[in-house]
Amino acid sequence: MIKSVYNYPVSTLLDIESGVIYAIPRYQREYTWSRAQWDALFDDLLDNEGNYFLGSIICINQSQDALSVQSLELVDGQQRMTTLSLLLAAIYQSYSTQPNLGMEQQIELYNLKHKLVLKKKPDQPRLIPQVQNHNQQDYFAILGQVGVLSDVETVANAGNRRVFKAFRHFLSRIELYLDNAADPIATLQALLEKVNTATLVKIEVAGHSDAYTLFESLNNRGVPLTAIDLIKNKLLAVLESKDPGSIDKHYNRWKKVIDALGDDYAVQERFFRQYYNAFKPDLKDIVSVPVATKSNLMHVYEKLIAHDAESFLQAMIRLSDHYAQIVGYRVVPDQPKLSSLLLSLDRIQGAAAYLLLMVLFERREELELSHEQLEQVVKFLIAFFVRRNTTDLPPTRDLTRIFMDVTEKALALRGQAVVSHIQQRLTADSASDEQFEKSLKGPIYEDNKAVCRFVLCALEEARMTRETQVDLWALKGKQYVWTIEHIFPQGDNIPDSWVKMIADGDAALAEQCRQTYAHCLGNLTISGYNSALGNKSFAEKQSRLDSQGREVGYNNGLYLNQTLATESSWTVDKLKARTDLLVAEVMAKFPLFGIRD
Image (cartoon, rainbow, N blue to C red):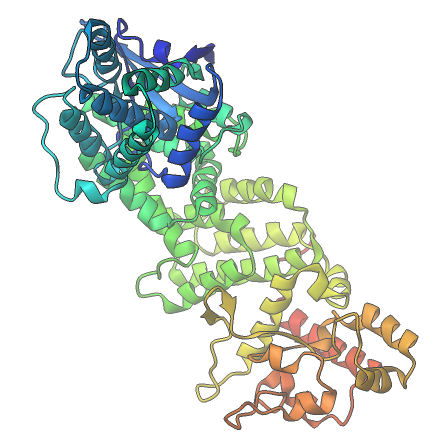
């Protein structure tokens, strides 16, 4: 619920008679603004009239102490508020070093001081930055350096960090600004007036879920907080309130969760959505949401954390480790085959099934599942997703509901009955063999490149021996070394050699063949040197050598290229025949073992 929305000048937000402080959650992301943002702020203030709009901040109401100090948790706008405070500190230092300050200037300097620290409690900074990368210590050290805060020690290497760099940058900008000023004090007063009259919309909300809802709709400059940031902030705040002084310990425990999930925010968010959706039957007395989505995630987790923060954190540490194994970030201990299958499930884009696997991993002993039975499940899921991602059946919108239902019913079963239930239930929702075959025979590369690459690699890997082992998933930077090669080139400008071979010199017919067959399975293979083949003639593709005399064409020894290496030509009939052959192999490799009704 939004409690208030007002457009305030900075002088009111930092009113010296108020006891308001702005506390950035202790383990919020660190201060990241750099020279470009510092200069943009400074120049915007100078170049515009007073009342310049700086954006918005979002605060959550906190408690008020006996000295009427009102703490607002600053959950959005931290970069802007920190930068404004550093600018004010730089103005204070420049102002205080001016000679012959009169009574009016002394009063103005006094007022400026108490925009940075409270008037009623002068050892209390108005802004409390987060602790990441020493942001808080560095900011307090700057306040000590300019003389508004006492008994502050500078930590080592502070001058090399971003907070001090911002402060020094503003000092240099102010110095340049005053260089040509006839009256430096009046010029400083004018700059301070620009800052004081600039405005920010201050939005106060009742809780973290309300803040997140706002993030979804506001288009603020900067990087908005994510649902995961807010879950962390809420969790640490609750744990700290119940165990004062323990926040560092709990933050380190939280870090285990994030370390397991990795840096990809999409994976982090999916984990938290799938945790609720997977264990919803156990959580129904705490949260009554049908399914966790991006928009209601904070609502779900506010309730879970408020119910039992400690148990929640324990579950997150345990489940995130399972999840890291499921998505392939970590191997399953002593289970190389299961780890390999899970990697394949990730490659075929089977993430919708992770909520099921979270429960199977977490309750494996209770469900009386062996690792071999888990392998059966994952192998079946791979086949399911090869078919689903080829045919788009069942539709994407139904997958979460399907896997939630499969998971809930599996909890009542044990051992092989769990495996059979999963196979039968998902088989009933899967595309038929006829639908699968039809999609495989279509322009599969155009429809889904990831599926196309996966099935080609799977067919090739099935024929590899220890002597011919090649890592078809190896990366060079962010690109695969082995890529999909179109035998008959896919580009609009068909080379003359191909027009002649594929259509007996008829350019219009060749173009028709390209549009109809270029992306079919039978016209595709795998090459580690795709750029070297491209639009080459069929004969050149067969015999291509690299600069060191190595075979990089169809004589490279891969199973998929064996027949291509011996063909004297490439025709539509041969392409269609190869399509039929490869489709039959794919269907045989990825059958559904369940029983259709």
